[in-house]
Image (tube, rainbow, N blue to C red; front, top):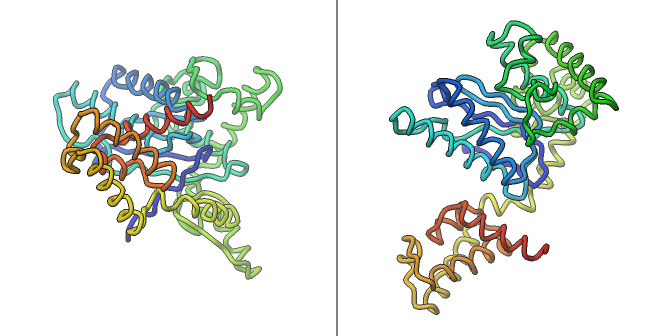
Length: 327
């Protein structure tokens, strides 16, 4: 079965998971961990991605974040790519460090925001890396210590989380600690990661209740939330679907536009797609990147392939243009 397109509009809340290939380690020592955390913060700031919770484990990561205009895929590509490149260079290895496709779940904020923060930050305790909540408070490789003011990560959205627990910092931190302790008592909570109807409905009790009421249900593997929330997310994504999965008609049109402009500028399509750096090629790329992304809804990845540059380069062109228009 083909994988579903990512559901992502700016401001979408995602629970993101990425694992090492064949469950292999992605960090060996604290130097690796420090590099990852530094890159996480730098890329979050650069892309204006909001990070609410995070944890770096031996062979996987969890993030709770809100995507920005740059998009989730761009953020994750930069984060995982930079870490993998550093890791491979440091240990003289080659090949993929992470599984081909990271997992992301769109989350219903009102119902699951706080539960996911606790779930993510409790990972080291559940895995036995620390023995108690007291030890977790000093564990530097997740966002828990930062919420308690014991680590300082300016890119982590402390205030957005703590303000939900109290009006003063000390009151909020104690409220957060009490909540985490109560969530720990609930055990693994597989519905936070389970799939399909179970996850979208909010657990088996809710599934059975709706079935008894003969209430129509909607579910999606990519969504954590109520049936109504899942349906709304899919509806909202429909308008942007062509930007994730371009139709054959769109592909044909973009090829015609590309060929026409290349002919007009005296540039071969092969040279353009091959990375030619002539002034004429740069001009074509800038013009068509804006047209393909902003007018036709083509994905950054597809535009990059047609224009002979990277997806991040396409993103930079579009981002600069949007900044100019806003300024």
